[in-house]
Image 1 (cartoon, helix red, strand yellow):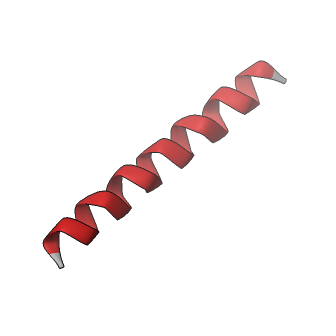
Image 2: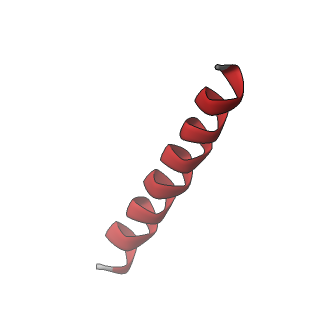
Length: 26
């Protein structure tokens, strides 16, 4: 359970960084 939560946290962090990168790229 804790492992899955850590992976989920990484995905959330990555998606936020990706959105920020796309916003800056536009």
